[in-house]
Length: 423
Ligand code: AMP
Ligand code: GLY
Image 1 (cartoon, protein in one colour):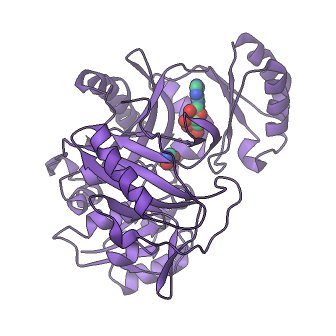
Image 2: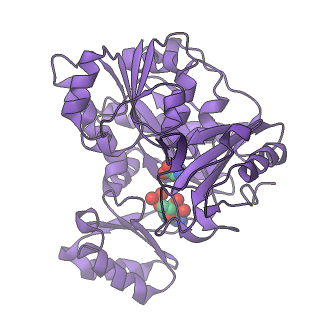
C-alpha cells in the first residue's frame, strides 16, 4: 500500500516511524515532512492545505491512504474534497469530514453536541457583540476563575482563564470585537472545572472504535507548570490515575455517547477523536474534543501500540475496524521536547543540531527540523521529542533526560520536570 501523511511535526514523524514498520507498506510519503520523516519515507514539498496539489500527487503516486496529521485541512474539508471527486472518492482518508471536524473547529458546536448527547462537560453559554450584556450577567453568576473560549480555531491561543470579574468582562468585549479575528466573534463562557487533566484517544471507523492509550501532556513552558502555554513540552503514557475502572467510566460516559451521538447526528466520522478530560475525584468531564492526535501525545501513544497501525487505518477506511486486533505495550512511555530558546515567543531558526547520532535507548522524533546540506538544523519552536520506555515513569524519563543532554543546538531549552506531578 502507498501512504501519504500530511503534516510536518513530531506527531507526523511518529506516524511515519510506525507505518514504516508495517509489512503492508509499499511506499511512504510525507508532505511536507521534516528531517526525521526523510529517514523513514520520502518528503514531498506540498502544503497540507493545497488540496489541488495533493490530488495530483495522490493520483500520480497511486496513494491508497492519506493520513491527515493537523486539524486545519480537516476543518477546511480535505476529506469532503476527496469524497466528491470521482478519481479520489475511494481513497481512504484518516480524519473526519468537515461536519465531524466541527467538534474541534467550533467550541459552541462541541458544547451543543455534548449537551444534546448527555456527555459530561462544564456548564456554558455563548455570546457575541449582539448580547454582550447577557454575557456580563452570565459571568456574574459564575465563581472565579472565569473561562472564556474563542469559538473558532485560534492556534491554541483562544482560551483565557481569568481570576477577576472586571477583566473577564473586558476580555469578553475584546474577544467578541475581534481579539482573535473571526474565531472569537462568538465566545463560549464556561464554568471552571477543578481537577487533573488527561487525554484519551479514540480511533473510529464511524461504527466501531478502539480506545488508544491515555496520555498527559505538559503545556506550560516553565517548570512546575508555570509561564506561557506551548504546543506541549512533554508527555507521559499511560496516566497512572487512569486505571481500568476510571477508563471504563470514560468509555461508558464519554466514548460510547460520543460515537453514538455522531451516528445519531448523521456524521460519518473516520479518524481520531482526542478527548481532553478533567478528572475531578474520579469523575471525568470533557474539556475539549480535537479531531486529530495530540502533539506530543502521539510520540508516546503510537510507540505503545504493538499492532500494525496501517492495518488499523485500513480498517478505518473500509469500516472493518471491528475485525482488527489491537495490542498495547504495557511499559510506560515518556517524551521530552527540546525547544528553541525563546519559544513560545520569538526564537531563532537555522541552528545546527548535533548529537542526534549519539542518542541511545530513546527514539528521536523530529518536530521542527530541516535538512540543510550536511546538517540538520532547527526550523521551529519545538525541535525534537525524545521518547523512551521504562518499567515506570522514572526509568523512562531518566533515558529521555540523559539523551536530552547529548543533543545540542544553540539556546536549547527543555523542561526537566516532565511528570513531576505523577511520580
Ligand atoms: P481547550 O482549548 O478548550 O482545551 O482549553 C485549553 C486549556 O484551558 C485546557 O487544556 C485546560 O487546561 C484549560 N481549560 C479549558 N476549559 C476549562 C475549564 N472549563 N475549566 C478549567 N480549565 C479549563
Ligand atoms: N498537545 C496538545 C495538542 O496537541 O493539542
